[in-house]
Amino acid sequence: MEVFADAWQWLVDPQNYVGEGSLLQRSLEHVGYTLWVMAVGSAIAIPLGFYIGHTGRGRGWTVGITGAARALPTFGLFLYLVLVIGVERREIAAVIALVLLAIPPLLAGAYSGVDQIDRRVLDAARAQGMTGWQLLFRVELPLALPLVVGGIRNAVLQVVATVTLIAYVGLGGLGYDIIQGIPLRRFDQMIGSAFAIVVIALLLDAVFAALTRIVTPEGVRRAGGEDIRARENSRR
Amino acid sequence: MGWVLDNLGLIGELTLTHMGLSLIPVILGALLSIPLGWLAHRYPPARGSILSVVGIFYTIPSLALFVLLPPLFGFSILSELNVIVALVIYAIAIMVRSVSDAFSSIDPGALRAATALGYGPWQRFFHVELPLAGPVLLAGLRVVSVSTVSLVTVGVLVGVKSLGYFFTDGFQRRIESEILTGIVMTLVVALIFDLALLALGRAVMPWSLLAAKRLNQEVS
Image (cartoon, each protein chain N blue to C red):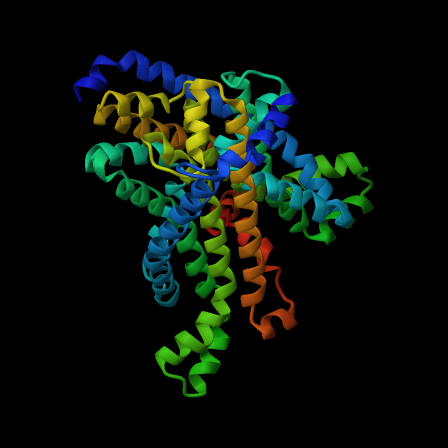
């Protein structure tokens, strides 16, 4: 148990908050990579998911690929990409590997968000004279949003966890002190960093949990028909 | 290709090790999450707290867990037990909610009918509830199995050998085909586990073939 006391000492040591490789810098790097990956991943997967949900095209392979992608070991893929792309461009390898990790949950959220909308609602909107774009932005998007954000939440969770591993090739993030500490048996910095990652992961998850509630349209909330969180989780 | 042919023995050995390391968490995770999920389903006041505790565990990154567990449980960080315990925790975190949903999705009429026919609580659980929840349980178990097989590879960072060894070793020696072998074999192991679970489901629940297919599509 005293290792936890050491880890706490390490966490509160003012030395770890200044200069190169400080805890603060590592945390910012960690969150920075996560946000980058989420931005790229969302730009690819959310429109694609909407398209699939809207048209129903490619539904079969979407389900197949998102299932199979879960088995892909991101750490191995990352190291492979580093060798192929080149060590000097390892940031790009990291972003590609992590984007591939983020796409399946994002795609599933966007696709199922549109897919679960009651067809009668869409028919009613069309009957009121809405154009295709109006339908997309004023009916489908708001109704799909809770599940889309749920997908983002799942993706963030996995990306935050996996950014830890990119330190293996000397990139930053909070994994740095863990991976560097293992051969040195520096349990204080390993456990301290692990603790910091857990805190960041929990904070980000709480933010997206709150966001899921906020984006649930008033009408859906009042109808109270479904527990969005339960739906989103059963998809994991 | 040359590397693969020269190292067939090692590939076979690590594949088997990897299967062993994945099998225990999948089995233990299933055995532990069924009673936990059932409790969450049966006692609504407990549901919230069980599911949120489990949700927090799901949030903890694997490498962090590999580092945090040894001092808590008193085993070496290099121990295989470390990876196994961490993965059991993840298996429970993923599965408890689907177990609870599986039991909640059973038609209460079927349960009342069983009680009316004179089934005791245990009998009812094993002969009515468990079989009816089976297809959803299987779908949850397949998710657990796939993610466990993939997560075992991370254990190599704390020194637990698995197919993940090919990632770090291949990277240090700059052998692309070695890393690729690790990736492909991990996918193969995941596929074998998935097929085994499907076969198991078909054997114990022959009636639910169609239902399982449908649910699996929904889950993924």
